[in-house]
Amino acid sequence: MALTQNKAAWLGAAKHYTHNNTKRFPAYGKQLMEQRLAGQVPPNSVVVAFEWSIGRMFPRIVLAEPVPFGNLELRYLAGLDVMLAYRDKDASRVPELAQAILRVNPRSLLAFAMDVPKNTVLKNLAGEVML
Image (cartoon, rainbow, N blue to C red; front, side):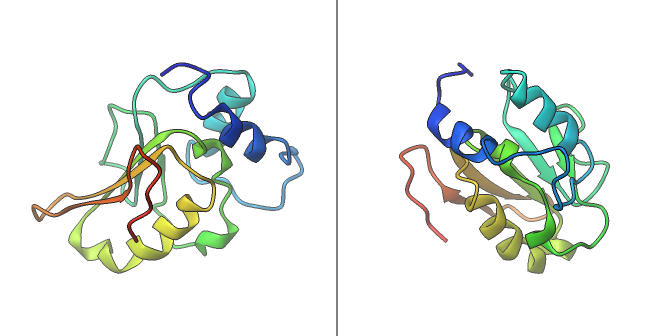
């Protein structure tokens, strides 16, 4: 993905970043933030998962512990394609997490249910939010 894709969304999110931020980084989130601050963009979609076993082949963040999604640092997802991959047992957590991700303005957001054939586009590439 080119650095210029949705650069305004990323710059808007990053300009308020400080290392003394009070929000909590999910697993691998701090590394993604540091990469974004260095001007790097993940080559693939970023996977957001509730389990360690999901999305290992992609840039990802893992929310294995139950934490309030409003307390998570997610600004590094701004301007990126994001896949929210989950199992049915975590389906009730998806809408709230999707809202938290949408607040940082990803390029697109797709929710992917691992154990049922149900994929939901939450924000498409045209910027239309369908939640």
